[in-house]
Length: 128
Image (cartoon, rainbow, N blue to C red):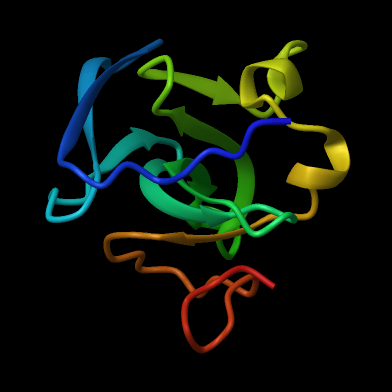
């Protein structure tokens, strides 16, 4: 399988969100991280990921601030296609160009302030 690397330039990716319309999530070194509040305690937040095989990627996580920071989903930015691979998609692993063992378990660190305590994060802000 091919190994992806995190983008090294500023990237802006427009994502269509069901109820909120178009929002811009920033990726890349120097890009301003974004948090999109979806309502009902849910936020979509830009994040860094480290996959099981050590690959570093950018993307976003869906976090619920109403229940202690429960993680409800992840989407990974794919620099080779300028698209996203959402974890709950049927074709997630082929889009990632990786096997299950190369992706899982992965760690994430999201950007932006969260007002709730997130029991998933260690002192450095990475998921456990």
